Structure formats: structure tokens, C-alpha cells
Length: 392
Image (cartoon, rainbow, N blue to C red; front, side):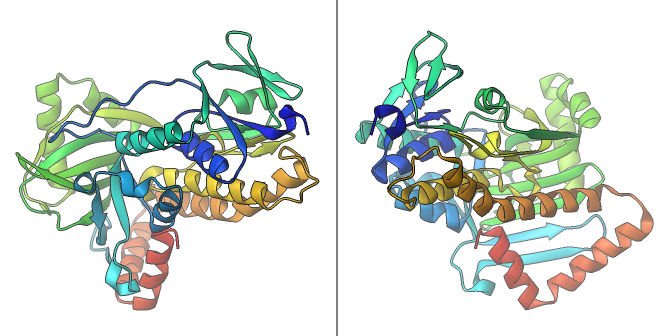
């Protein structure tokens, strides 16, 4: 068998790309990583990466299987033992891990820490890493921006929402803008979070406060506020001191004082929100993570979907018939079919919730809050919701 049919080129060196390269290598496949190779700065005590992820139990199992979960600094990982969701009136749902006999619903982990341990594992396994940019596809090869041809029986596009691999392969892609911005910043809270993730559906969008390790300043939470674009733009345009004061005022109102006074302890960052889907595969090409799909962040499931893509792709490739090449459409179609239902379910759930709470019509507002009160009283529905939230 020639090298071109053996080698898998993973384009993209973020969390999903690194996990894909590592998982394929551990499955006995030959892999080359293609993309920037920028070291992660050492972690500084008391300082935290602004981007955090809620890692589901399913993702945690996969990262453990890759051998990287135990490499994380446990002092920087926060278990989520409860989740409280508040409507815009009296609606409220409280989910607790013990209600489904689970120790933890999720873990809050910094993006930089996940990237650091994955990079270390990639180095330990000696995975080839070409720090060049993807330029295009040729028969049986990837072409880099320096003109180098890297043989490839399969190209995995883990290169993000604006995926050059997706564009070069002609895989179908649909995008819908939410005309909203995800604002993120860490906050110091007056009251302890007690390892609970809190979420409010408000007229100003969806606000989530995720539990983080305490700092010298006090209790810490990470804010993710999906806010209408015009409001977010106006807030971001203010001078820093004025912006922080305005944000703290809005937080106090939106969170109903649940964690007492909330104080900004970092730099506010924002990113536009989209709902996106793709055809996911083409002959010799498979997409994973944001290159394949994006959903509304209100459920915090974007990275978990991406890691599930990776796990499924590895499984499909590893279990293919010996006579089939890794890039055959018959093999890749199995991957697409296996991911179709979970990705669609998450799209429908997140987009449906966004639409439900975006409506200001009085009958809709009454129905959604009454529905939340009903769910809060029914243990079997809570177990179902916890299973979904945890990737079970």
C-alpha cells in the first residue's frame, strides 16, 4: 500500500485537531498534523484563560481514553454538580447530578489547559507536525502555502468555522447569523457558586455563569452572555471603566443578585454567533468540529460535539474492512450517518430554545415559564435532561 493511502493529514491544530491526530495515532494510523505550532504559555497561578469549556462526561471519558485527562492540573478544573436555569419570569429548572446518580454533570476547563496537555501528548507520540498553512488539495495530497505536497489518503478538516479544507473540497455548507454576540469575561462573585452552573434567559439574551476556581480576590465565575448584536456592540464601544460599570449593573439585574455583587476581573471579549451545518464528507475528506457544524452556545456543547465527531471518525476508520482505504466514501459515509442524528438533535434543541426565548409575545412567554415550572417538578424529565446535558 502506498504512503498516500496510509497517511492521514489533520488540518488544524486547535483542541479538536490535536485530539483527532492523537486518537488516530493511538489507533495505529499514520498521521501528519498541518497548521500553526505556537507553544501555550505556562499557566500562571491566579490567572485564567478567558475561554473555558464545559466538558461533558462523554468527552471526559474520551479525553481519559486519549491519556490526557489525568495530565490536567486538577486545581484548575471545576466540577459542575448542579445546574440552575431561570426563565424571564417565574420559570425555573434545577438539575443536580445526584438526581441521575452521577457524581458530576460536567467539568469547566480552560481552553489553554486542554491545548497544553494535548500538545504534550502529541509530542510524546512523535506525531509529525508541519507548521505550514493549508493551501489546497491535489489527488492524494495536501498542498501547503510553501508549495510542499503532503501525501494524504484522508484529509481531516479540523480547521475551524471558516475551514479552508471545506471550501477546497466543495463540501456543502449553510450558515445562518443569529445577529448576536457571545460576550465572555471572568468575574469575582460575592457569594460562593457551590459548583453550580447558572443560566438566565432574559430579554437581553442568554446569560450563563460557570463555576471556576476561587482566586485571591474571592469566588470566581466565567460569564458567557449571548447578547443581541446591537447591544453588545454598544457595550464593547464604551471606555473600559465605563464598560465594566455598565456590565456589572446589567449583571446584577439579570442574575437577580443570585451570587451577590459581581465584579469584572478580566478583559471583555466577544465573538459573533452562527448556526451552521455542512455535508461533513467528500471523497478523501472528512470534517470535524466547527468546520463541520456550529450551534448556539446556550447549551455549551460546541466542543463536546467536536470531540464526539473525532471519536466517531476514529471508530469508523479503525473498524473499516481491511481492503478499504481510509478515504473511501463508503467508509466516510458511515461517519456522516453516525453523526447526523446527534448533531441534528443538538441543532434543534439549541436553536429551538433560542427561538422560544427570543419571542416577546405574551402567550409564548407564559407557555415557556409554565413549562419550566412543570419540568422542575418531574424527576423523570429531569433525568432525561441531565442525560442530554452530560452527553449521555
